[in-house]
Image (cartoon, rainbow, N blue to C red):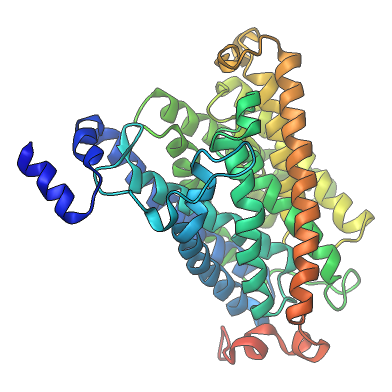
Length: 431
């Protein structure tokens, strides 16, 4: 023990690391290592392929490049200060800077039953995918430089504070908000930001009269399959252990995704005469996004209803945003992720109840001092409204700030030419 303590001291790691080694659980660590890889896999290549196939041929590389660049920027910012601000004590609103650049965190530092560097890495993968989701709202028209600046600022000024509120000991966590894997933290923030960006930038040239179909549905379906599989790490990993909660979270995730897929498919089939692959994968994402906040609190019966409502509500939200409001949220980020996140966060307050028979959840509310479904629903509602309002206001301000630094949108000539050539001097296909 003396030798280990001396080695830790020489290497610069805190002495508590040695003492904490016995608290690390190998099974839990192995599962969160796997989950971290699965969540990163959701962005690269999953989301990149999913989004890349949905845009037109002349913009495919720009979307892939944006996803890769965001992965790099978000990872570095999370390491430098994001993790510290999100997951240290600080105040009810934001953490402190005690773990900047992982100060004091060594290979033996422990978070629960896993190494703290692993917990930080797992959370980093969430910080990567959230701003990447926003790409779908401004796809095919934002300048690459503006996208980089906006994504960096948005991560630190929107994602990090909301993460602290919900998971880092902030005020929403103190209230007892249910958000197991990111209904508010990931899906509402990304969906609202995408909606605001779509409004501020304005529609693509030709929208809504000109058809802009996906250029490669094979790529999109491939990416969608990766998202479905990766989501097991997203929700199951949020249990932070190899245990029954992780197993149930994965099960309900799968049930909701399957149900959302079928509901969206059958609605399209009835309404338009034929089911589409695009509808099927969009329904799947709706089911996945909607179950996310509830995945650790509901049972399979509740997941079935959540998936059913996700497919139905998100389908009509998509129609309303594009056809009625005529907002060019290019890849339907708000109606799928934003609306799904809102719906799932509210439904978590219902199906977590232990009094619903086969649809019952696991009644964790009592531990937060909330004893009724109505009380939990009120907390869920506050979480939704606070996250929505904060994200909308700060995102709008950031877009205006970035517009003072550089033009947000490409020129009309560049948009017609395509962002692949205009921004990167490359083409996705040389025919």
